[in-house]
Length: 401
Image 1 (cartoon, rainbow, N blue to C red):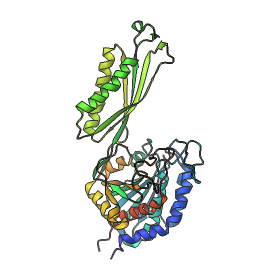
Image 2 (cartoon, helix red, strand yellow):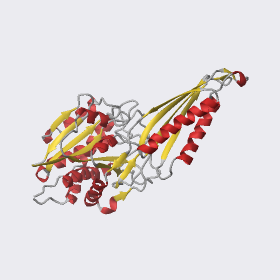
Image 3 (tube, rainbow, N blue to C red):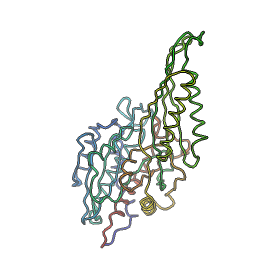
Image 4 (cartoon, rainbow, N blue to C red):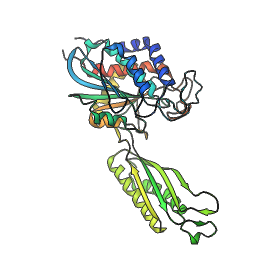
């Protein structure tokens, strides 16, 4: 059987652009946060109801896995689009801005859902060109809720012979319509930490009669930065940021305790573990020098997102055919953001790529970024995402004869 050119997908995605945008805007106006997204789930189910897909509905979250079977038997490919929003008040002024107080699709997950649903429509019309099954994974809880991990634990993605998994993530800081990807680590592991130093409070005019935890907290901030710059290899980059320090109630009281919180980003398990150990060592050492007690709590977050080299090459080839080779960009260095698609890629070979959606006339370096209450995505890029999703599936599940 001859597979029609992947380049034919783009005109079809362009023809469906009005529907894709309308669905995206509907989702954008009705954002939901976390693992329980009843409105979003129902919107997805309504959008794909006419495609003849077999549904797997999570019993613990709002996840939807829709099975699209090709005309011939074969392996399974996972396509993922995350659905959840962020706890943020939107200030874009868009006519379709969020109608929900304190919630916003500031990371573009509404576009991911709309593009995946659009790809499902293209693929459903091309079942004869598929040898195998596509699992369309509409995922809740990506924003720190570990939604992908829950889906894996529930067995929603446990098909036999899964040959790969693919996800797109939109970004306002790449040129619109481009597909941006790299092999190997593309996003960091992200852990959080909390340090509590406890001393003895007293009058600010008599620090010798108290045991002030504030100077020790300041020392720790400086010391952990020195540890990263002098003890962690520059060829395995990492970031430790103390993002919050809280102590005291007023200007003339030495507090009894000080609290610090922050994030750790890394690209290998070895460096990740090393930083955890060194943070504990630095904190305990400085606390002991000041005769303070210290509690250090490190909460592991998402692991490193690692793109399989072979699958990434497939994505490059498909994207070149779909959007044009000049629109496919190799990301030189991994990004310090984190993604729970990393759980899926730890189990199955695959890749995540970034879809550029910088607004027209804006420098990508100056565009409001993802997670900003001012972020705006160029909707013209959505057709490129729809076609790329569908193209990866068609290329991965080509009939052998």
